[in-house]
Amino acid sequence: MASAADSPIYATLRQRMVDEHLRARGISDERVLEAMACVPRHEFAPPRYRDQAYEDHPLPIGEGQTISQPYIVAIMLEALSLMPSDRVLEVGTGSGYVSALLAQLTAEVIAIERYPALADSASAVLSRLGYRNVRVVVGDGSRGFAEAAPYNAIIVSAAAPQLPHELMEQLAEGGRLIIPIGWEDSQQLQLIEKRNGQPRTSLRELCRFVPLISDKPM
Ligand code: SAH
Image (cartoon, rainbow, N blue to C red; front, side):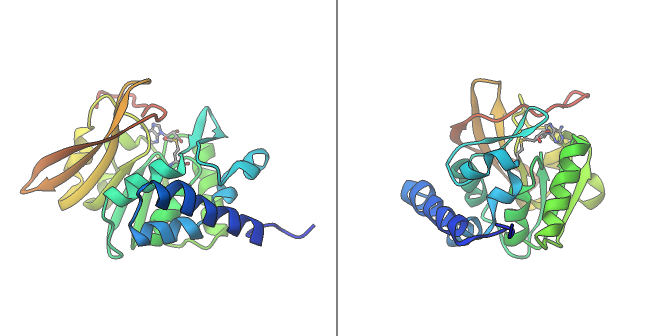
């Protein structure tokens, strides 16, 4: 059977997702909309969930983890005001879907995932799809990844009780960081900008992510 890598059906469903779930609900950053109309989310979903890849909800990817909901991903990417020259850290790579979007929107992406099996599979899909500017690293992303810091933007795709201080330290001056803060049932996105070395926080949408797991206090 021919590969359905990016059949016209998937492209149509993806454009519908962008129009109905993103643009119609207020996402207006054209670069983000274009990237989401282009990255094949179904490639990051396990085969049995592929037919749901362009619906607006998270999908299971194994290890009790999920691919994030497209609308929330769009909100986070838009809030980060990403520039094509940015270097970005992603904490919680999971399937690699958000890594692919970041790779399309920015110059260089470091993506950290604590489960080796998820990191391997994300890395394999990303290289099969031709993304060359993403490096997937296995590790505890709550401590960031100091050796490639500073970053112009940091996106955390798992919820923490508070902002891990090492992430703030690894953010460049003028950089932006977005993270869901809270507990299992009640989280809110926080956008933090670093100005003159100090965090400027704005509270954003309520959300629900899997927890950021760390062996050490954050
Ligand atoms: N953006 C991803 C979301 C995956 S869910 C996607 O769309 O596929 C969040 C991911 O964060 C999970 O894969 C989980 O294993 C990972 N995670 C949780 N705590 C982590 C930590 N301390 N360091 C790195 N990854 C972590």
